[in-house]
Image (tube, rainbow, N blue to C red; front, side):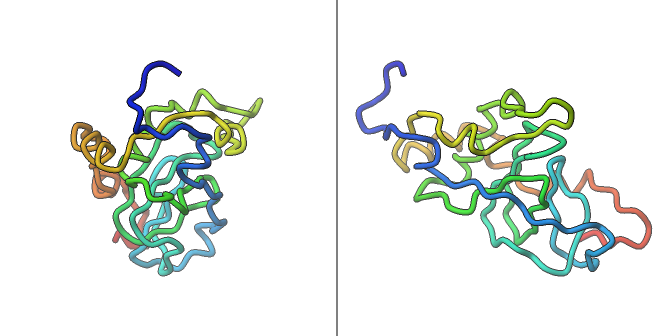
Length: 164
């Protein structure tokens, strides 16, 4: 795996964070509210209930692969996503940067609708730096510190849908 400092931990990806599938919520069954529903392509709409407290890292599981979102407010991860439900002591912004750099779209496991099977990536052997190094790394990346507000500015609700 190349030359890494001795203090970098080596293991399977699942030893560094846990990905969980999002929850189904159709737009018709959502009650307009202030919590963003994050789908594989970003904010789809808003709901009055959040499933996950921040910080959150969300990526596409079905439909749109490769985008990774850092979420700094309560949110609902849609079933077209995978979200990190346990950072296992790692810096959430670093995990976001890490997933972005994995180019997850290359792990497409489907023949028609793009699909990311978490089981195909969680066994990958990798290395993670210690926490202080993770925090230094994320400071050098604008991506990892980019809040969800940049997504909100591009969200254009249809009439009758409340924007948070």
